Image (cartoon, rainbow, N blue to C red; front, top):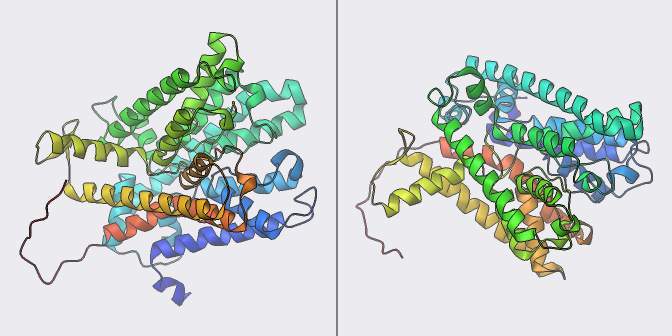
Length: 439
């Protein structure tokens, strides 16, 4: 226990995630979990994907897992999805881990809280939101699945998809995913509502519920709401425009209303949700590139979503805008954004770019496959999105290891980076400024 107390908090969190992955792997290897024996690599890959709420799978969830196997998967998704920064701080505190004031800075800023008391209240809000959203989602999805499969099986399908959607996991109990329900209005409303609520962040939900509309919202909430609306509009609009005449995707449906419905679902789902109601391998290259960008951006901080986060992209956009307008201060909605925040954003984007490049390079160098499919797979893993162009099964052992590492870093990485960014050291020696020519 004393040795554990000497570890940095993010290292303890990473170990907790790793322990959960290993426990899940052992559970999947049990005879009762699968319809036929699976390899250790398949078990580890599936467990990693579940704990990191990614959704990529090398096992057919419908035919490869028994009810108990699906239940294990769902529990891992729920635990992984709720492994938020607020929970991490409470767990570490309960274990007696030393979390100094400097180390708490980034976590409290990200949660928009000022003390552990308010952080405890936030966890209460989280639990209420989770229970309400998942129970409501299950009840509404029962309207679709119970008439088709009966009460027992229908309720299970509904509960599984509700939990998977809220946690932005993208796992489905159907081999074909949600493609058969591509034009079902309930599916197209409930599933996106669940993963948007789960992915926008609990700080935002708390602000929206407790404070006056817009004027009472904090800067973080305003940036998240505006950024999310813009990304949803861009994603849906471009998906409709680019895929309207594609015979493998939207053009499968003759009615314009059906095409718009599919475009809506696929336009919002790339931001870490992972569900698909159309053929991902049939997308035009331009649409696949759009989805890659959305997957890497992801959702909001303190949410079930992965990726770099919407606020990161918003701050970078504002900093770029300030540069071109020759402003020395970055501001939005009447609030300024400090240089420290911009440096954090630069570090996050740089690390995300390096990790994605390294992942694509390693798989491209060791696999014979389409470059776009490889890039799409890596972006999906890093953003914890779970969408695939049917390339997951083509991965070799090394390729699966690379994807697992990307999934793990995409989930645990932000907190780890936040810890180091929040740990400031005062330089003992100051050097004279030098000039560097850029551009």
